[in-house]
Image (cartoon, rainbow, N blue to C red; front, side, top):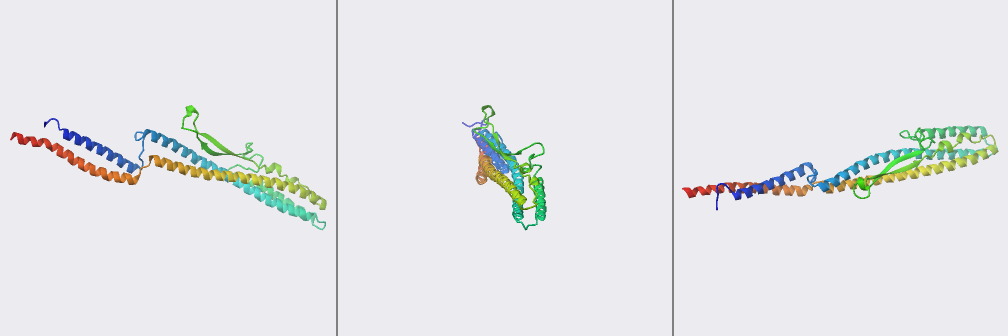
Length: 286
């Protein structure tokens, strides 16, 4: 039965064309934004996961900054400690020379005093961003070390009610405290062979303290550096994971766009043909 009031063919063609236009608009949006899941209505589950991961990436970026500052602070202290070890080795050589009866003990002691001042100057200067890990008070506020934000850890889904919220991990770097442990200004003055031998024993003790402190600071610097490398790789992996979830496959979208444009043209022609069908009824009334 044909009707001039109800054109079923036109309705079907219109529905098809509307569907094609909707898919075409979605594809064009994916291409223009670069995201297949740009809003929650596109895919609520994937969108929620991506937002949690993006939040974690932002957190890891802040952690990377904290690690960079911590690494620099520890590196400065480590460099200062290593320099102090070199100066103490020079002092030990002077003390050994002073044990000789023919040595000029006055000049040797004068050289020792200069090197003592050099050590004290290194201790005072080995600070970064107001933190000095070679001093008793590392930050001027009674601090005894440096706490570095190192990781953001999560077990299970992001659910505060079930205690699955991320937790923060830190790396603590203790002060080497050369200010208290290296009393170079209190060493025995070299006036003769006997006092030079006594000073040598004291310097040997200072040298062991400095070597231990430098080694500890170096190990801490290495740990922070390794953690910084790991956080960088982890952040890159998370960004890739987010991209795999929400980014548009541009090759696929391009092919789909071409197909939908052809379908749109065919749909438009189909609707035009369906709209012209009732006109054939006019021939019955001639």
